[in-house]
Length: 563
Image (cartoon, rainbow, N blue to C red; front, side, top):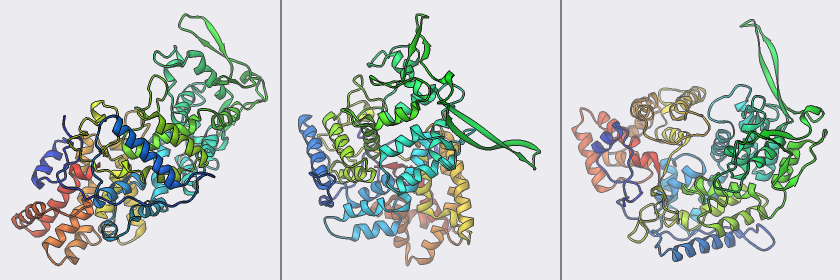
């Protein structure tokens, strides 16, 4: 079984050839990893009885118990270079700048990794990254008609910027109403074509995103593998039957036509036609009735009841199985490890048992006890022992390979592909390409936004529902090999990274080291330095050699993947 880990030492020319055919394979790591001291975390209490350190200790105990039970030996701890790059990409969505990773590696102390996590959680890039992730999940990659992407981003920016409790955010996303920019939460339901399909998409996506269960196939029949029945789908659907969207127009002098000015989401609680039950057709052809019911809890279906508000209240109410908390824990764990406790993360239930049920329940319980504190949950995950392991296999955990269909044991870090925004922002951090030849911040930012839209198009999927990863498609490979951003990245225009390196470096080895650190987040090995020196000396000019080296590293597997 091949080891699912990163290739980190390879010839420059070999890398270019591999990427030219978009063969984004993954090989095992070939450099050693230093044993890292355990991270130290604060003793701030999350409840009357537990501290962050105690929660992390219990996570470690449960994970370590699973290693013992499955007779697997965990990999060694990742060295500071590998771990810091991972932490930056997972937490703030881009690779660490070269100077920052140098400072981190040079620093000492048992708590330095925990301190870096705190720094990243306070970074504005954290808010931007998680805002982008959840905006994409809520409304897709594009700009659907009648939906304000700006309004949706404003909502999530406030959620993550103020670290608002996640249950409050879900409540507003389900129950919100009003102007699509002033009340940005309404864009989630507006993006579900609430007017066109009587809340069918809203039913499917609300349960998938916020409860971690998939009910869409029960629209027409009972679920073949879990306990969901057809009538339960329509019971959920009835909560959205009062919901309406209304467009307001204005006259556009330029076109001489009426255009959409804004959209509002409303509830027709006073409309008798929206009261009462929902009727649906069974596969037998018989018509059946469904009333608004949430896992057996019935809601008054009469006129005057705001059903969405009742649904939102029930979703976040205290109960034996708080699905909103469990769904968020599972999705967040999957974000940091590449695999959640279930696959996929939004299809939980008896038909798809979690890999670590006790740990999932424990984290869910503590997340609720911590008042749905998102930063606390991230702190627990990123300070756990499992998150600090290297991506390199050892002889006794090669079968811990979820990519081959095995149950994840988290005995090493699973290699993840970057998302579109992660890859784009990492290219910007590594190259400062948007600054090349531009003297003002506004000009640089305009260029950054234009390139980002190109990335969104190249990395989008057919449905445009979520930010996708680098899959090695021809458009993606061509954009990385010869796109405008890459061409700017390897230029030597004033303001570019290469211009700075060639201006400030005292010799070739120093320049090569800075290029490796900026692109791959680690020093060049001896053999890599020798190969790079041969490339530079054999090129028509030193600049051409540096450009070829930088191009190859930016197009390498090691740059594209999170290990």
